[in-house]
Amino acid sequence: MGKTITLPAMDRSTFSRWFVLMLPITVWTTSCSKPVAPIKKPNIIIILTDDQAWGDLSYHGNTNLSTPNMDSIALQGAAISNFYVQPVCSPTRAELLTGQYFPRLGVYSTSAGGERMDLKAPTMAGLFKEAGYSTAAYGKWHNGTQPPYHPNSRGFDDYYGFCSGHWGNYFSPMLEHNGKIVKGKGFLVNDIFDHGMEFISEQRGKPFLLYLPVNTPHSPMQVPDGFWKKFGESTLGMKYHGNEVEDELFTRAALAMVENIDWNIGRLTKHLKENGLERNTIVVFMSDNGPAGWRWNGNMRGKKGSTDEGGVKSPFFIKWPNKITAGTTSKQLMGSVDLLPTLASLANIPLPNSLKLDGMDLSQALLNKGQSTINRAVYNHWNQKTSVRIRNYRLDHENRLYDITADNGQTMDVSERFPAIRDSLATLKKQWEKEVNALERPTQKRLFPIGDSTYGFAQLPARDGTAYGKIKRSNRYPNDSFYTNWTQENDSITWDVDVLNDGQFEIYLHYTCKPEDIGTELQLTLKKERITKTITEAHNPPLVGADKDRSPRIESYVKDFKSTKMGEMTLKKGKGQLALKAVSIPGNSSIDFRLLYFKRL
Image (cartoon, rainbow, N blue to C red):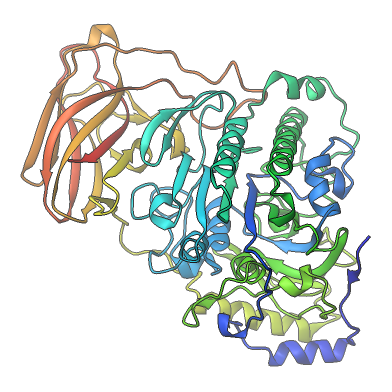
């Protein structure tokens, strides 16, 4: 086993004075880093799971499941025991990619455009691409759908997956590949890893950055039969500790999904070995937030959406054979904002001196160079609630102080024992919220871009639209939803758009229509431009998902939508409202609507 890195002793009064004097925000610039200089630039693979708890690993003592391949990353490399992300998906992904706290990037939601990152912020993919890396992302993006927010626009040469926050079907679903809508092949997580391994095989000696943000164990709870068989009737030996009710069916489904990811990591590891790449490839494993349900999670308080330990503590394993000593463990406080500067340092990629980062280069802790643990604060925020984590303590959103080393369940407020620490952290929290604009919400609705000059495609899904009249969304969670109940003429769906450049576009409609409702005439307008389309072909597939769900879902069911060309439209640069209206409904209803697809001519 490798050396355990521990923090030097510090008495309570010294500790309190240190935090009183500490600056509100430590902004680290790349000029401070000391990059390691490997002979050859390493390949980098980042595996990001979706809603996987810190406790969903046998490495962390959970006997309900077995994760040998996830565990092996830690056993053959390093494990950070104090690694923190944000309470929900989009913020963590934004921080991982940019090294900046998500409110600073303008991220404020997980849908309706609020998941998009500031375009002025360079991404890890873009920076590594400039350094000669091939870059690819396969899976759930969740940081913007339309270029210039699309992954191809943010530094990734190749992208396959879905850009939305959640998806309604994991078996051969509708996906996209570099902007083109395609059909997936088999179970989605397996498909994502297949694409990752194919990408690796194609590199032929060129260094690569491969980002694998898989979509599980996020609901809907779907997993192949072979993985469900073990858990379908299993008895959970380790259960949630609190007063809230654990949904054991949901838990068993989540654990089955985790074991499927673990199996895929095993396939990926074997592929690296067979291609002679394992020794010069850095593999990172982490999750994006805490669990979506109550289940065993090391007795921590909180789950997804919470700024308490259980909502934001993530596993973090990293291996790099012969560089990171096998079995290294570190108590260094680390967060998603640290990934970019740390990986850049490990890869010996100099970052621009002008690049301002909230994250730190913590490569020395991973490389076990004898560096003492660094004192610092990590901030967690969501829904106007902020907590602060330091070496031994967490100040929660109500300014209660907890000694996490002795009480990770946050059951005893120690504010009265350590008022100086509490007051110092409360001050830091206020200053951080002000500095990154954490408590401010946009005063104007964010527009959806069309007409990016580099990437000649854009999707406008039902998720981003606003319906009028009797039209209803298929589910209150918008990310994988469609519009239905279109029964009245002149009811409409609109999008507030920003046409970035003049251009002529082919526009395709993705719809379903019952045979008796053929003949609906639709009209699409933007300012003075308009095209019409009469639906002449029925397409009425069933809803799918229920037969594959292992636990009842909260998301929308989906179906196979048909694409038809609406026509061509000349769009002029500028802002406006795009509207899709049914001007004639000869039957009982119009179409069910999924998305509009714009293709530049």
